[in-house]
Image (tube, rainbow, N blue to C red):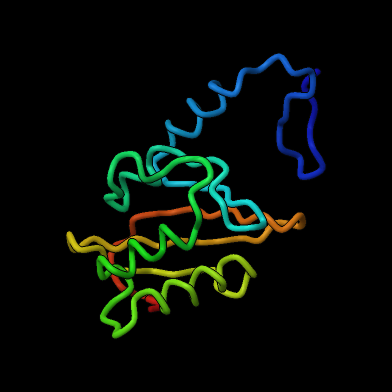
Length: 141
């Protein structure tokens, strides 16, 4: 039976919806979205999360470690110049995972800017949205 959750958002409670329907809805969004487990593993993401950031096909998959993805970005130069991209990736991954980093804007190799906004959920998971922005205002690298 459909009802409104505590936040007022619509949710299905009778089990009648298929998970593919939810993925279809997520993939229709322009902004990227990713849900990370409390231990930093990808639970679900939409297509825009990959396409916005030019992530190679097959990299975004359930179980992917947030740190693995952030090391890829750091080595590619997404977070700016650094002598130790792996250390920078570890710092940023831990910050997002603990809710200490809530927003990060970076310039991608193709010149576009993407902002990631993270929110730590009460159960320890993290919800991150990704959006293309017009420039470096508020860059946190």
